[in-house]
Length: 250
Image 1: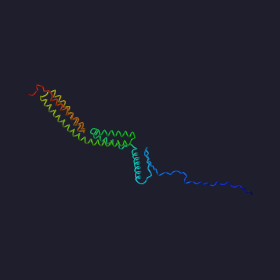
Image 2: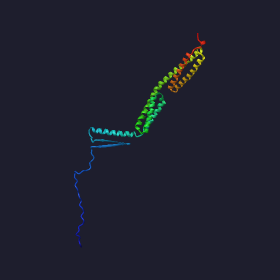
Image 3: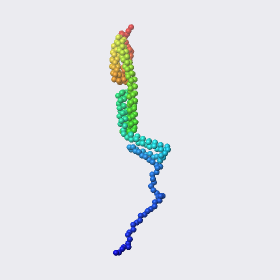
């Protein structure tokens, strides 16, 4: 049997290569920088801190991180319209109006309404933080207007009562002067004109009393003052009217 002298193909020996410790390698992350991020809505906050973990710098790093977290939470909290606060402001305005703040505390009440309007405008512009501030301002001003109304309404009630009493006294005086004139010191035409004027003022005085009874003290004051002024004018005209010669007293 013939034997082949050809040898089997040799398998390549595995090769090895030495890697020098001085060979370049990927740079490991450095501890000289450290960052943390937190996002809220469409805002993204990045804080960069030196890698100092001891001493006063550690407290400063924690403080800055707390500020970032608080800012993120604050922005997240303002992500929705302040519907609750705006409803409270509207309720306070309604209460103030029912108490009469639109008459007795006009400036503060108007400021409350304006603040609420600005809150709605801010919501339309998606500026919810400003809307919240305006809503809180509107509620506070409406509450102040209601308190102011209570004090001024009590004062107005006393003033209205006094004005009605003065008008009633002027009415009584006018009736007395007309009777005296009718006794012979003035012409019938003069006394008739005075009587008509006094009758109109008597109706006005009754309107003042009606306004007082329904709690509209400012209207009562205006009507009573007008009646008293007209009554005094009627008496003045009556006294200034010339007395006919045939009716002069001797």
